[in-house]
Amino acid sequence: MTIANAQPIPLWTGETPGIDTADPAFQPTITPYTIKSATPTGCVIVCPGGGYSHRAAHEGAPIAQALNDRGIAACVCDYRVAPYRHPYPLLDAQRAIRWVRANAAALNVNPGAVGILGFSAGGHLVSTAGTHYDTGCADGDEIDRESCRPNVMVLCYAVISFGEFRHSGSMANLLGENPPEELVQSLSNETQVTEDTPPTFLWHTADDGSVPVQNSLLFAQALSAHGVPYELHVYRSGRHGLGLAPEFPHVASWMDLCGEWLKEVGF
Image 1 (cartoon, rainbow, N blue to C red):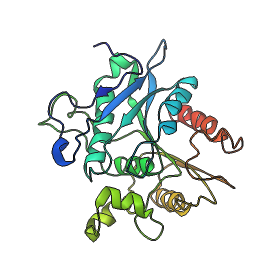
Image 2: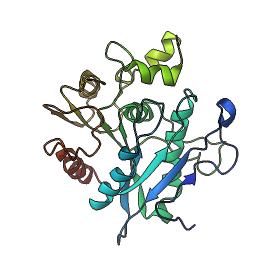
Image 3: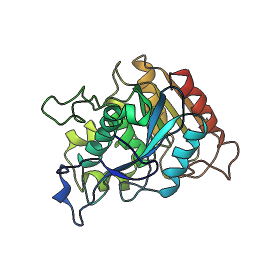
């Protein structure tokens, strides 16, 4: 299989699950950003933020290119957002992980080093993918038979909890108004961490006015309680939605730190 670089590819070539549950219909895609390497590299799937209402462009391709600059392949996942509801964004993220593993040889990536990175609501999607996964669907196509457990997570000023520190807009866009309490609890991902949760890199700013830093702190606390390796960086100040943070040089260090961490864990 030949894969064109930086060209979107439908996650499903046949019928997309739930494609008709919203109008207009949206076909989720994955856009690879590969690198030349004598040996397979790790690959990180990037999920932009946007409150589950849109996908912020500055948290997509520029992040993939920054990972490429650090010797890591990347793919941008254009997952479904409102009016699509749960579970469709999660199905898209899971399919993206499976897709990378199924196409690892064509991408020149290591199928055992597939991570997922997300910003804000995209971080909620990533933390959901990292706590709600399976080892493959035996009755699915060759892609669905791959595991959708990521090897690592990277959470950037992420929405994590739908409890006290929730981002109400993201929650409403994902779950609708007045969702069942058991669903809210299931997707408050600090409550879903286990010993099998993937190693995680987190960063946030202490004065984030949109998504409270407590989201990252709660997730880090849960990781610590279950003995899951993690690295957490809380920067003194910076608005929400910084992406690569070019106007905040100190905060911009997150990408170099993340790149070093990814290399340390096998990427």
